[in-house]
Amino acid sequence: MGLSRRQLLVTFGTGVTLGSAGCVGDDNSGAESAGTGSASGADTGPSAVSTATDQSDGSKPPTADSRLYLDYDIRTLEESIVSGGVPKDGIPAIDDPTFADTPPETLDPDDPVFGVVRDGEAKAYPQYILVHHEIVNDTIAGDSVAITYCPLTGTAQGFERGPTEFGVSGRLVNSNLTMYDRGTDSWWPQMLATAIKGPLTGESLQEFRVIWTTWKRWSSAFPETAVLTEDTGFSRRYGVDPYGQYNETRGYYSSTRTLFEPLQSDGRAHPKAVVIGSRTAVGAIAFDKETLLRQRVLTGRIEDTPYVAVADTALETGYVYANPGSVTVEATDGGYVIDGTTHDADSLPLDRSLAFDAMWFAWAGFYPGSAYVD
Image (tube, rainbow, N blue to C red; front, side, top):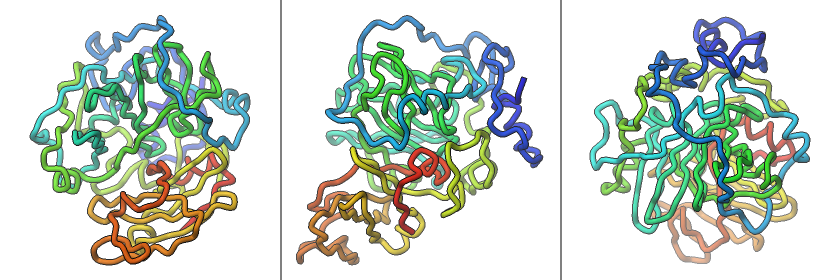
């Protein structure tokens, strides 16, 4: 039997070379039944076991009108599914989240949070909580949504969930969290947002933007924000990240190593360099985040269509827009100027393309044909 994810993490933490990357654990291993929390020494008793049912009820999440671009055929992606070393729901989604107006004492100003604003309602989801759960089934401004986070690929994404909920399948594709919806039991690699197994195979989910930033930056921009609390219904060592830490970055998040073999390797950037990537129905593009924050405007193409990325320096994020007319976008102290008018980074008069942060190795693995702008 190969190394499980938990064993890989222990090996990684000691600095030993991961010669067995890509090996998987036994789904029935009792040592793995508490998922990521087990890797950090969390309680593995009854309170740590998900209560989600495996019985599909036929309810479906809302899907997009057209499928997002894939660089592989679906059969190849399905054949690339591997065990992450935990059983289905071994990493338990948060189905009954609680929020507070003040942050937990363990949330430092520079700690990462995933922020969402919807119809004026702002919420923040601390990374140190989601690393133990990966999915929050929530309601924002009356809408049923799922906030999702994959620590192995550094991706935080939002999805409409309609009458169903999402759970953690215990499987990975290209190191990426593979979700399942509890209505049809279709399997959705988070980054692809497209089902590769089950009744909804080939369909793409409806997405919305999740902002990866810090608590200080988010709470300054949205002082009325609610913040997810540690009252999740599960016993976890919140504040202890089994993969390393982001404040300051170390461990898995900074190493060139990955726990699982990527679908493709690409040496154009450090494997864990952060890109802001966007994919459409016809292609994909990635902008180096550090370069974007420094230069503020970057340009590239998907097929024959020009795209422009602009930085939001207050939140330390970026936005991507289709720019078929190749209009000039200039950065100024007050925002971005187009045709003499100044606009905020998130409201340029162009067609915005949904984008999100990702580790380069994961983006390049899923989208080897992607343009890369640095």
